[in-house]
Image 1 (tube, helix red, strand yellow):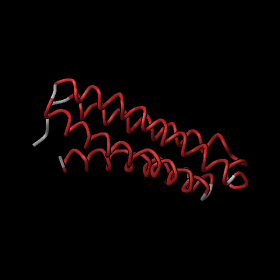
Image 2: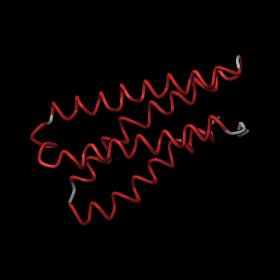
Image 3: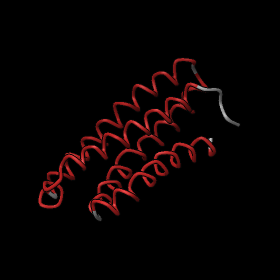
Image 4: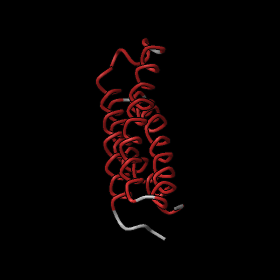
Length: 126
């Protein structure tokens, strides 16, 4: 379980870091802020989903499937809902380049979703 959680945490953070370094050098510190907000809002619900799926998966074959659907919903609400809240509360910061902000949120969401789905659909790692 710890290995899978490390993968789910590490891969989106690594992908974001690989993307934000050149973007930050090219387009400025704003990219670092957007990446940090996106990772902070999207990855933790993915970890919670993985833990819940592990617990439910032990009791039922359908538990993992249910956890993926519930996790996707939770990640949408927390990730995108939180992003809307952050965006609205800090309009002066994010309004100047809103597209970058939303692309970061979407990108981190999709990477986390792919990694989580791969981990939940594959054989359990021991």
